[in-house]
Amino acid sequence: MIITITNQKGGSGKTSTTVLFSLALASVSKRVLCVDCDPQGGLTSFLCPSVDINHSLFDILTGGDCAPLKIVRHKLEFYLIPADHRLDKIYTTLRPFELEKAFSKADYDYIIFDTPPTVQGISLSASIIADKVYVPADISRATMKSTLYTLETLLDIKKNGDVILIGYKEPAPDSNSFTATITRDFVKAIDSHYIGTIRKSVSIQRAVSDAGLRWTERRRQEILHPILDLLGVEHG
Image 1 (cartoon, rainbow, N blue to C red):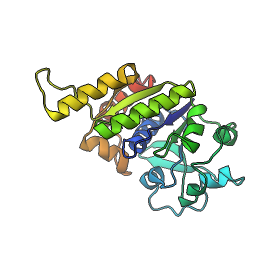
Image 2 (image 1 turned 180 degrees about the vertical axis):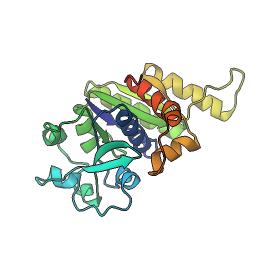
Image 3 (image 1 turned 90 degrees about the vertical axis):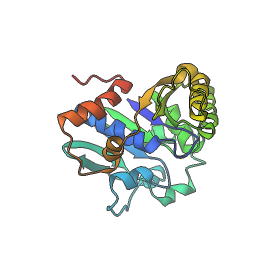
Image 4 (image 1 turned 120 degrees about the vertical axis):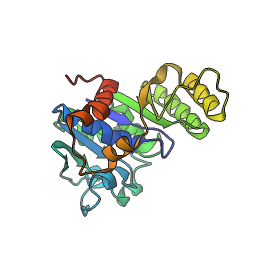
């Protein structure tokens, strides 16, 4: 299965969501390849900050090769195609089916594309070939506009974007605060595209950024099982 994680808004939670998806799927023995499609290399920095990147997605897309990097997070294993600054030369102008050609023979249960803050170029290419497209969004006015634009663009290529709200809490019925109003407006605007939430917490932040975190059964149940529920994957 191919999963694309996209939103035209930067800082909306795409990279963190990619890491959580990869960890969750690895926890149920799925063979996972995540692909960093952003020339800023945010996903690459999260997963292998001390590795000197000599080959990356740029090489694959320009006729070369790049061996996937094995990522190990306390017995949870998955693979990464990293990104580097050279991708900036082509990511906005990449032709729609280049990623399909590049990964058509990749042998994984799941391939997850983490895209840059655009819905054109490489993000469009990743969305076209996706079986599922997820649109993470933090709750703010700026993100709401970008999220709606992203959903409209996906519909143009006959793809349905499933919105995951980061840190969403249903406001109290009698609250008319600024945050409560934005939250209600956001949920109403995305309507049936909303499929669930990912909590904002210290434990979630550690899961994403702490390579030495021990994945106890309790942590799997509290952090990874809700992610698997979002993905519709059984976890026993």
